[in-house]
Figure 1 (tube, rainbow, N blue to C red):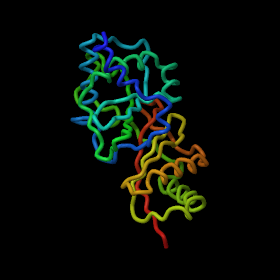
Figure 2 (cartoon, rainbow, N blue to C red; figure 1 turned 120 degrees about the vertical axis):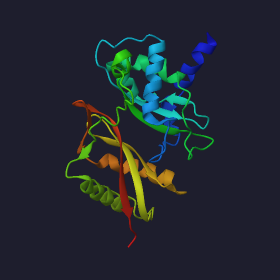
Figure 3 (tube, one colour; figure 1 turned 90 degrees about the vertical axis):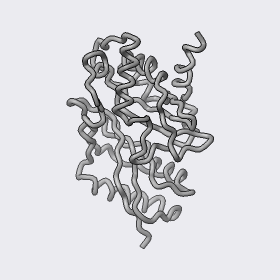
Amino acid sequence: MIKKLFPFIILLCYSSVCAQISNAYYSVGEEAYKGGAEKMYQDIHDVMTRKNLQKCPKNEYFYVKLRIDRTGKPGLIQDKRTKEFMQKSPCAYDYVIKTLGELHDWIPSKNVTLSDGTLYEFPFFPNDLVGDNYKKDYNAKEQTEKASYEGGTDAFRKELAYLIGEYLADLYKPEGVFELSFTVNENGRASDFDIFPKSPSSEQFVKDINTITKRMKDKWIPAKFRGQNISSRNVIKIRFRND
């Protein structure tokens, strides 16, 4: 019994205490799973088939947020949003617990440290992966209409540059082109910012960016999957200049 429960203990090991851990994400182009998202979804399908899991009564959706540690073990982030999904998508949550703990091809990030892990997010539609519903090379991310900002990406860059200049200019002097990643939720709210490449001051800089961006209004139009608003991870390039 202990042996059977072990994968699930690993999967559920992260709770709100994770707020004390660095919230670093995989960098652009870095895979979190061997073979990429397509192989991950295929392996989830294989586990569901082996366990004879049936379609959920409703077409539920769960936005999975994992922390992959330095040994490649996944931990499901148990934050406020996860608890909300547990309430509105109980079947999808149940299938997350029954499947992800048995996937063993997670790849630790090259940027992971000894004390923390790296975050990875993806949309999970269990009914797409049940039996004959599953299609080879399925990738929910690639079938998703990307989130967009009212006024365009340049308008977002302009507003972000203003906030950084207004509140952080005296603290940091970044220069060059960086990739800024962040999550836009189903309501158009951007959060969980991260930046690449990293520098010695990156961790505090990212924390401060996450603080000042709370002043932004919800101007994002959420990503859509078959007409349904979903959360998504987004990346834009931004140039910092000190002249």
